[in-house]
Length: 391
Image (tube, rainbow, N blue to C red; front, side, top):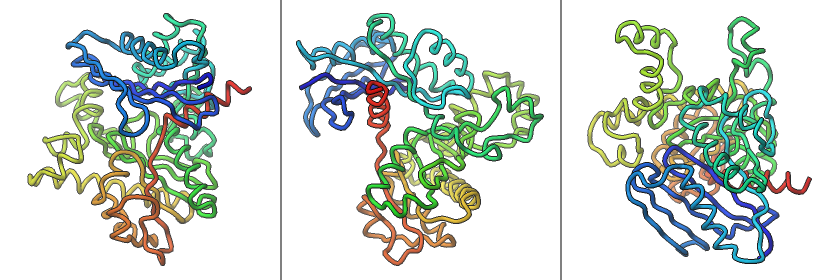
């Protein structure tokens, strides 16, 4: 096997990783360390179903820095002698105004990206932790940051601006949009499946613990539901989504919530978890007979339908609706409800196709087609990293 590149996708309690060939199309290895901070567990896999290694640590034994070093060592052991790891690509949620494309990371860029932590407090600190760890222990390894915001930066001013005094926009207070690496991958995958449709007006529904929608025309982002931060837009697993700012002011005054209290409420105690009082996991809510679970699911679906209407208006119509991410790829009931709610747009579901959950899931005569396309953010990061290496 020739030289390779690796990808790290770090979250709050886990780090997913993969090793690709230098063309970024063949994946040789993948895995993750989950349970960071509680009960860390490393799993290393090769081909589908092939577990190469597993390891566990006791509670508190491994932080993000330690987990990154363990991953690097596991990759080095896999590569063996005579094969080099040429670069490592990272998912970084927020790139701000300046970073509109993947970049090779140095100390100054790392410092600039740290300034965006308040805009993505659930993600940015954990995205940057492995970059710092690699820089400290393997300073000669080229590292590339790939941004979830970059895909949306070409949107028109109207799609990015808030109705605030203009100076705030210049200072960076604008709608950024997120999940860009997922949208980029899925939109390119749609080109392979249905090239004519991919050049039209498409809404991609990235539905998972974090959820958003993106309106895409001819492969470019037109509008998205997430805005200045990752809490805006759709109701999510633990995030509230769009909320009247007056509610925040009211709760601060009535309940004495400070900045951190509000942050905890809207990021960690709301969404499916807050409305149901049961779980943030759609699978758990689907299995529950509690009326609160059904109510949370109904609100989740309603908010998606409201936002689809908004994005269809921004596009001036709709040619295709695509589902992706954990809920979008695996929950046929949510897809069914959304497709039926979009009948006015011309979406007609096919029950058997939707149950199978692959490729086209709309009926053949449907004027607007619907699809399930699995996302692959790691592969998108690998492609960007390989492109920078080639340059």
